[in-house]
Amino acid sequence: MAHPTNNEREAHLRVLADKLLFKVKRSGERFTLTRTADVSKPVRHERLTIDQAEKLLGNWKLHGLGGG
Image (cartoon, rainbow, N blue to C red; front, side, top):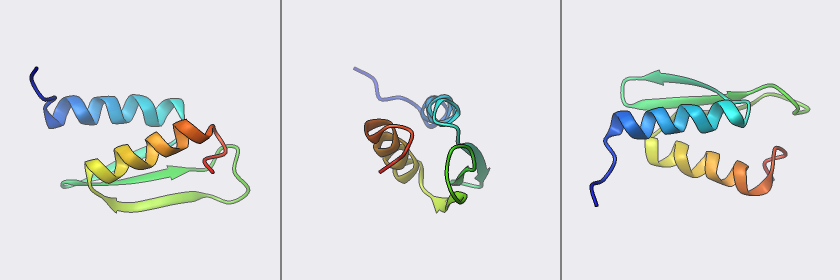
């Protein structure tokens, strides 16, 4: 089974982020995830690798829209 390319991983990351109400900004090989909807104060994670961003969104998905 072939491993997904970084472009495929980023596309999946953006789809999941959108479902979880995060905005994604890419700067070089790093990502910033920001969420302002349905939170008491903005949630922002900066300079994440794609692995870190996928893990963060996976945790939000597992714990529901509350993220924790």
